[in-house]
Length: 231
Ligand code: SAM
Image (tube, rainbow, N blue to C red; front, side, top):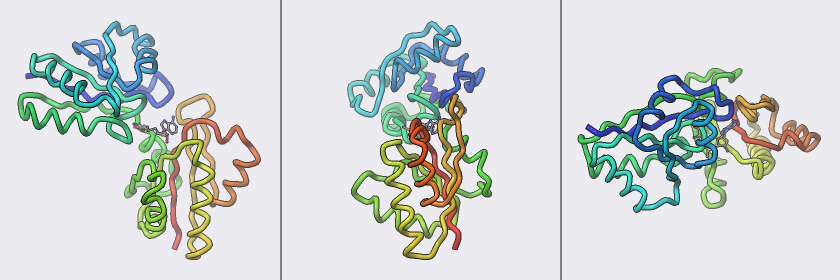
């Protein structure tokens, strides 16, 4: 039976990859990855000589068909996203759905667990993280305000991804429900996890806006936000 491996890769530090992932990446017939340059760094670090082909959210049917045809020929395929776990705010689901539709039980779909920014940030949460809600990136425009309104009513720790371009905007938006609803939002910003400038920054929305405005380097890199709403 053919095998499709969904392989988690590091979110920064190249040592955060499992032995199993390295073994699978060395053994499969083809690796499809979101970003060939990033994945090549990982392959080079572990002396993996395998071939890389690109597969990203704009790849379309042709690429999906190519993967399905390889699977029909009993080839083993690995999927890598640019960083972390495929399918978590990254491509994955539509390929898996199509593979299941076309090949049903003729293919094994095998997860190779590893790093993800969401679980890495949660692992250092000062607030209980046994229940949480992961919203990924909030929509840019349509639906953003209604999501923000809902956020303050979730009874769990909330996890968001946000880009450096919208971090201050998001904090500004979060300071509104604080003022309007008399609810306090405690935030942990996990910046550049596992990388050289890793940093955990804590505060309420307005305090964080001040901190970031006073230190522009804090606005560089990648961010996960944990929000705890106190009623
Ligand atoms: N699939 C990835 C995962 O499993 O975490 C997420 C991919 S998503 C396109 C990229 C977002 O993940 C970034 O904008 C940021 O919010 C978060 N992220 C990824 N790496 C990170 C890191 N090293 N530190 C903090 N956040 C990170």
